[in-house]
Image 1 (cartoon, rainbow, N blue to C red):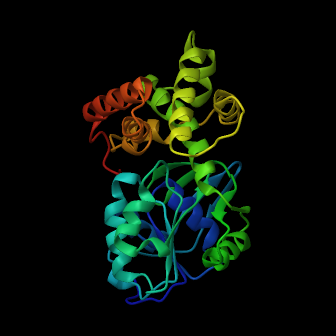
Image 2: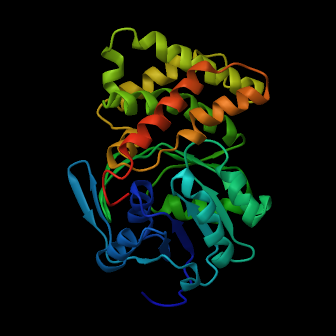
Length: 312
């Protein structure tokens, strides 16, 4: 790749979400990608990204991609799309290459990624975003998109230019006063769907037809919502399970990211989803037996399947 490039936007990651966003943004910005996965980075730098989106297949030109942050000279914006267990490494990479006034936006699952990034970059340079894009990695530089959701960004002038770039790429951007509310609403859904589909090895929609599963899913959703309330995040008066049910119906054929991780033998994000809910519950002297049990079971399953495939 070209040494010491000066891109506008660096996408940190080379997995499903990173590839999907990069394939969209490559025509809207001077873009590069940064990740520690050499097989994915090398493929993207040589061949670009192949994205299957419904009946259409998009092939991009080669995209600047590297495992070494010194190859990039002070990009202004970073979109962080690595798995949560890779966030610390991503933060250290960005501390090396991001412009001194540059900002990082995390669109990752779960809780706590923004705190890890802020530990390296400073709180004033890190923003939490939320998106519901559904994507599955098929191999290095190959991604299948199951659906495009909006990208929710905070109503802060620091992300105005990045929001415009994302909109110019053809994605819907919604500006929010309380991104944390959306983050927790997504967490309620993820705390139910991700671990259950991973444990049962089923697509999302199968959960709705299994005997007794609705009651279990309701208990998990309500428990996560109670922890959100203790954390001073109001999710509204609606039944928290109703949102879970709606998302499962809309994504019935999707395979959750946690199920994909288990099948690949990759580490999961359980510690920032159910594990994080259980830890916060403890901090507020609440019980969270459903989240705690799911976290324990997924950790056990992940230890059993670790290393199943090479491209994790």
